[in-house]
Structure formats: structure tokens, C-alpha cells
Length: 389
Image 1 (spheres, rainbow, N blue to C red):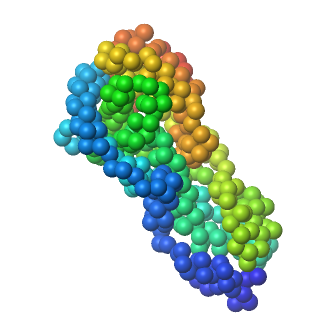
Image 2 (cartoon, rainbow, N blue to C red):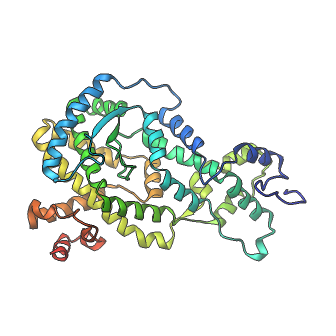
Image 3 (tube, rainbow, N blue to C red):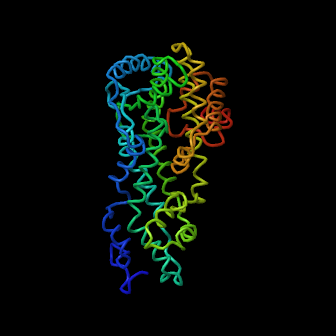
């Protein structure tokens, strides 16, 4: 039970020895324990095993193929690929490096997500003195940064274990013209599908450069950042779900506590709020336009340059629909769910524009924030063309 004097400021578990010791050990300033997040991300990405550094030959081939891809993507899109004025480079990295970079790059988004997932509404007056309510509030105060650091690290670590390039999830990152490629994952994927290594590298170069070009457009980047941050901040913790999960747990029993906290979705009690449901169609529309456009660029370039393009495309599209539960959970939390229907929706939108207005019409897609498609227009490209005309 909570001590007679009640919890002291900054440590709500003063009267519970086990939790008190944990709280003192793991207290962290801010909404997220970033050291914890980074450590968990690397541990899960590598499964605790050491990694070999990428082969220097891999770096050389990526540099050569990036130059080829850069010329063709620029020609097809008419977009500037660089954000700094220097040449864009795809750089091979380990899973651990990809995970650490992603934790840093997504910091504003993860911090906003942590704040929404670890905040709880003020209890009703008749519940304020309830021991379970006090315990739940104490968990949020003392362990929220640590627990979300573990959760954020776990999410990014799962992605790193599978990611091929920097934009496996098309989320904007701080301006840079160095794009990370997880060479071990790329090589494993190529070997599993028996595709020529340079064909796969060139395909990835085209896909990453096209995504980078669109997300580097200031108004596109700003819209994505706005929608992603608003969505991440819109979760509301279901206190009743937390109480149901923890209400019968003896806080003095470490094993029982660990088991109760084992499912992050249940622990956080996260539910999609009405505000998120209103916002999500706008985010999905922008995401569909992006992935559909990138697919079109990859098709336009790849069919000319990549000998095994048809086989490679089939392999990549199968990979998209075989993402595991951990990947889908991350996509759900971040609002970037990329199921097959989302890709098909985007592909149909882009094909509809090209069919009606040619590549000249498609070139107008990213001209300004005002012409970005609405949810209704994604499913009716003729409406989009009529509006911008």
C-alpha cells in the first residue's frame, strides 16, 4: 500500500520499496528516456549479436548506382533531389546504426507520441484517493519516460531488423543528403529472391531518391510533419483498460508486474481518439499520393534500366504485404499504415492523372500546398485535375 504520508513530489512510490527503488533508478527528464530508447532499438535490431561493418565494395557500388539513379530520377520528376546543394549519397550502414539514426531523426514525433500515450485525465473527485488510481498516476509520472523509451526503442528496433532503406516508412527526417541503407538486410532479401545484387541496389536507389525528393519539398514536408505530429498527439489513454490490467497486480511482486506490463498496447491503453479519426483521411490521402508517385517513378526508370525489373517488382510487392504484427503496430501508432490497399489507392490516383493529363499534369502534383490532393480527390483524380485547373 501507499505510505501514510503519501508519495513525495517526483517519486510517487516512496512507500512501496520495490517501485520506489525502480523509480529512483529510472527517473528521466522529459517525455522519453532517449538512452533507453536507443539501447533497446539496437538490442532488438541486432538480436543482441555483433554486426560486421558493411563491405567497402558495397559503398562503392551504391555510390556508382546512386549517380545513375540521380540522373534518371531528376529527368523523370523534374524535382531537386538535394537538400543541401551537395550530391545525394546512399550509404550502407548496420542495423544498429540505422536504428540509432532513426531514434534521433524521429525524436519530435516520438516525444509527441509519448506525451499523448502517457498522459491520463484527472480522476473524478470520488476516485482521487483510490489506491489503484494513485498507482496508475504514479506509473505515468515515474515510469512513463522509461516505459515509452523501451517501447519506442522496440518499435524502431523491429523496423531496423527488416528495413532496406531510410524510407521504409516514408516519414520526413532532418535535412540531409546522406540516406542510410541496411546492407545486410538488402543482401538477405536479394539472396532470398535470387535477384541480381546490382539490380536490387539500383531499384532501391531510385525508390529512395524519389521519396527523398518529394519529402524534401518544403510545403510537402511541412504538411507531413503537421499531420504526423497532430496524429501522434491525439491518442487518449483509456484509464479503465489500465486499471483492468493492473488492478489485481501485487506491486511487491516483480514477476507479476513484469507480466502485466508485457503487452505495450494493453499497458498504454491507447485508443484512437475521435480527433484522430477525423484527421486520418487527410494523412492517408497525402501518404497514398506519395507512395503512388514513387511507384510511378520507379516503374518509369526501372523498366528502362533494370533487367530483372518484373521479377524484382513482384518480390518487393510481396514483401509489402508480409509485414509482421510488430511492423503493423508501429504503423498504427504513427498513422502511416501501408497495407496493399493504400498502395493500390495511390497507384490508381497517379495512373488516373497520367491517363487524363499526361506527365505534364502529374508534374503539377507537388507545386504548392494548395494543390495537394484531398481524400475525395485521391479516389477521383478527375476531381483533382478539375480543381487545380
